[in-house]
Length: 214
Picture (cartoon, rainbow, N blue to C red):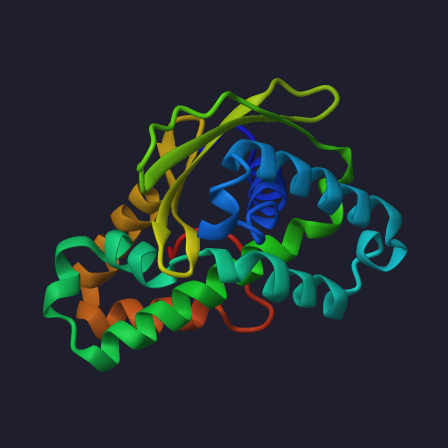
């Protein structure tokens, strides 16, 4: 699916951590790519200097993910896009379960690689943004020694609470689309409840923390 799953996971961690300070008030003074670049450098510095995080301290890793990364996602929109046409026939309770399980899956994905981002380099591309735009794509290249750079694009929407990520493109492949294909298979086999159950199984302790349901 992706050329290098390890660089994908680490790239997601680094860049998503860079988004925690984005807000409408800041957007009036600091361009998104400048703010993201400055914050990314700060996050990389913290990871490189914190021996506990580099050593895989799960509590510190999960605290960092919860505090710095997750508030910048629109998990409901991401889940709706990933579930696709099946979303409209899901009950409110099923929708809430899907959002919760998808969020948990992504938390485990990011936490699994947070301690390994110190060796990665992130290069930001000039942001194409017109005055008044509320939907932008932040483009980057992420690389590590001995590996070719991989383009990572972040689709973001300006909401009342600030800029929120609703999709990530890795090497021009949409994360939402990848999950949608897998989710469609689960819904065909067992309906919406079957998809919820598949995500729940994936999120059980001891299960791999990355990838779409099998």
